[in-house]
Length: 329
Image (tube, rainbow, N blue to C red; front, side, top):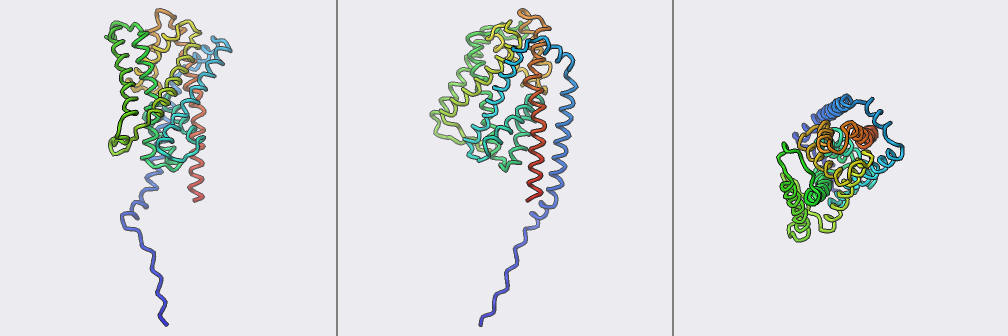
């Protein structure tokens, strides 16, 4: 009878993979701890920069129906923005459930507004989606689609506002009405070019720094424009209500669009000082400074601080569930 063959031993992993397995877990723990320390520091800085007594005083100066309407607009804006990552899910084809995608979108948006885009829009999305099992390439596709959606609506509204209802800027800003109209026309042309590219381009996948970015279809591009434009209009309507309708809606929209890009250029968390400065300068002829600041304090409370207070425990819960799954595995 032939002798039975001895069982083959399991192949051992190569030494370099063993080395990675050895050093990666402690490094990952250190990086996670450093990440939490950075977030905690930024939150403390943000909280100390707010005059809480003035926030409460400004809220008391507004009527209850006006505040409730502003809150409703803020909720509607967040719900709409939380759908931006669903467009990324559609374009990348990942299978994370809708509810979890919207939670990730909400947390990243709240942190983005308060702590800046590097922490909120990028780092938090990568961290949370990695906890949900997505690879870096897929997360990049989702992040690019979401950020592109957000700014497409801005470019469209800014182009139309600057072109058709331009706002008189201070002379020291070195941009007169003809220059602003020309800028608006260029922005509108950029939107038309994007739509033509989505409709006619034969090359649908682009490589940017090693990442593949898929060009959306025309239908998806139009949906991006519609969702983002409505979101920016909801934010403008929120501010319009908080200013008790003493300034025209088109003026509030114009000022908000100028303040938004000024905040991005300044790279200051939550655009502290930039938002207030732009609104005070551009509305000084129509509204007292105290009323402008009171409205902006109420806006920060409703749209920045309350969502952040909800996003922090949501993020910690997501981390805790991930760690529990790791221990069970």
